[in-house]
Amino acid sequence: MPSAHLRSLVALTLVGLASGCVRGKVTVKLQNDLQPPQRAANSFVHCVEMGTSQCVRAEDTVGGWDAFYILGWLGGGSPVSILAALPTELSQHGDDRFVRRRFVAEVERYAPSIRGAECDAADMQPIDPLIDQVTQVATERMTRLGMWQGDIGTVLQGLADEAHETLGGGFLVRLDCRFDPHRIWVATIEANGQHSVVGLTTLLPRFIGGEPPERDDVADRLNSRSLGLATAQVPVVSGDVDAWLPFPVEEF
Image (tube, rainbow, N blue to C red; front, side):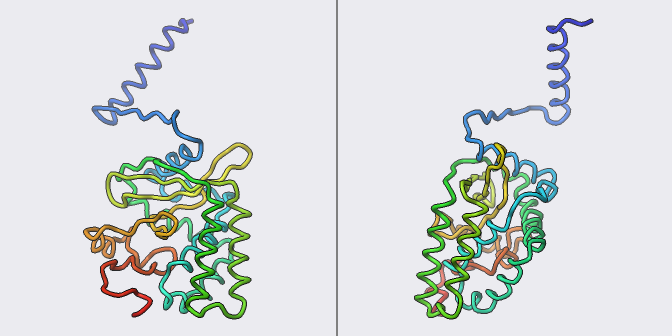
């Protein structure tokens, strides 16, 4: 029977050989200094790099993230796209299976760009205050644009309640990447002591910390199959197509 010391040496040798077969130099990144939501975000993104949408678990609730994303779009999206697409967005949001498929499609779409972008968790913040913030901004904007009609108030409150119910206590984790997309935001929740990812995007409203693409990146984004703004989860956010137009898109 080999001694414990010998077994340890053999195990270390096998690990070293396996690592050497993959690459000549192995860099080990320790996550001990990260919070659990950040570790969950890193693990999810690294999983996406290898397994794409297989990393999305069917039991994870994504309806709250979808509601949060729609509120953000109402707070900063093009009024024309809101008028044209809001009924469809709300109808699709009401279908749990569609919402889950949409999240899977988003992960599939982003995977080619995430792969090799070298993304790591850099910051995190509670998502509950952000839900309140996007709800307030959306409410003020709908009123300012003259769209506060019918049941729009009930709709916004319903989206906010759903976001709080399913994302409550969760975090929005920002990952910084060495290459485009440069920034990724991941929503995490905790259930039974386990942290899981329920949302991912490279587009976040500026009023809650998002950053539009740099000028040099706009053309690449428009032509990118995975990061192209025309195929975003919801219609294009106002100003993201070309941030250097001489007038606000709302005046177009």
